Image (cartoon, rainbow, N blue to C red):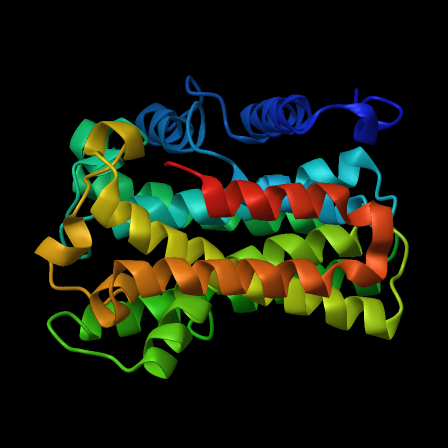
Length: 302
């Protein structure tokens, strides 16, 4: 159970609590490894458990504090978002995509199992995410439909999958900053935005200005996450990242660092952080965790 007032916890303690709560929720909702078909279910659990920063679930829980959302609802919404994220990583690592062998410090799903199983793992995790949102009670059916629609759009051709398509088409090309921003707003930003907005939808209704401010925060944070990711790809080690460092440059993928250089990319990250924090002022002290998460995303080393 969550503490009566999670804001009295230090940020690291709060973060660990949420990560543990999400890990437990995922472990419950994923099929047991011994259930038929066992190999597929074991691979689903391998791809989803015991790893990752859980940034998207953390954002869901932090946004839920703006609306006094029940932890039970937040755990379901956060799990759905994380399942979509996990499926995207499994598919992203396949030889037909980024062809990577390391994820979260261990072999990627298709290396540990095989390509066909990894493909089915991604399909199954995506289906399970929507099953979760559809079967749990979120207060009213209209809100539940909005949440399903939001996550579907964020993960489809107008969101994450569309951004990945642009990414694959852009290998070896130099994109303009608006083109690069669009690609990452879809590939990375759309699911981060969904994580934030879903958290807000789990509780009491926000006013129109509050929803607009939260959406502005989510969009800026999504781009911030990607800019920092691009910086880390060329400054951090493989051991620190838990995935292959320098892969974007080696694959001739357009990044913020390749477009504008390391120092200007760092300046852009600082500007996006400031914009994200400014969007939260309307919420006052309720936005404490979102503010702390913004700094965590900006300062992270992996």
